[in-house]
Length: 278
Image (cartoon, rainbow, N blue to C red; front, side, top):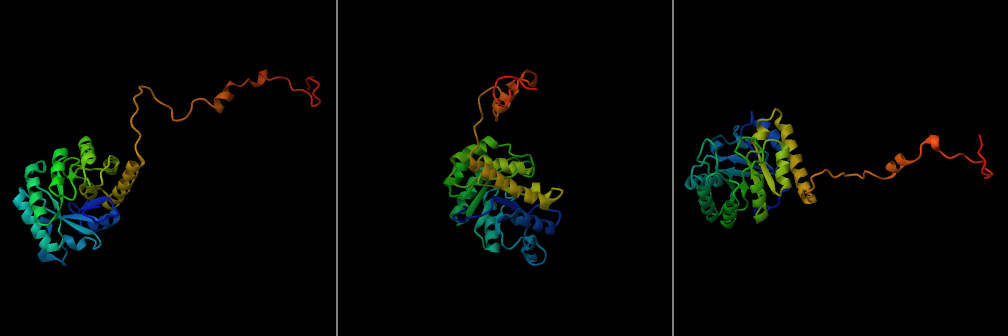
């Protein structure tokens, strides 16, 4: 549930880094995702209908414009307003990443931008560092979700912030969507297993040798991870030795302890006279 709307898929996808728009479209369809994010800086509204990236987004998908490239709150708000005017949606993925080396989200400008956007009527999904305090502040500011990073954007390094995300999930009253850095489907499953509501994946799908197949793999991993979370993971044991999952004794053990054939008692006659036969 995001801002009162229900979605069937817990996988969100991006549109960057694909070798061709056609590959992107096929991957989006294979992912089963219902929400796709597009960088507003990549959209050429003058080329709408002439092969722009938006022309290859399946029409049934919910568009989530993002403010990728914004260096501060003012620029992020300006981009969000342009996106709303162009697409008609009030959804926005807030990104404020002034450092081109790490693309780390600026916590101060992100919170400031979130406050401005919520006041302006946007439904804000903020990309942020995996900081439980910041996540709480963003929620208090009125954001519809929080989107902590798993690792650096585009790094494919996996869930390096696992413990922090678990803490955010434990304290959050809005959906927690793990965004950035997930490299393989097992990363998505792990994020879901610790209670994330969804994951957003772009680079790991787009740069795979077979993006369409990778998109499907992430979709399945997201479902598996959610089921694992709902099933309730058994806590780790404290014993220093192994604990067998099956009994080490039983009828097979009893058979092993039975007398051997050479020591079997003599067979008596059918009339029961006690004399051995044969």
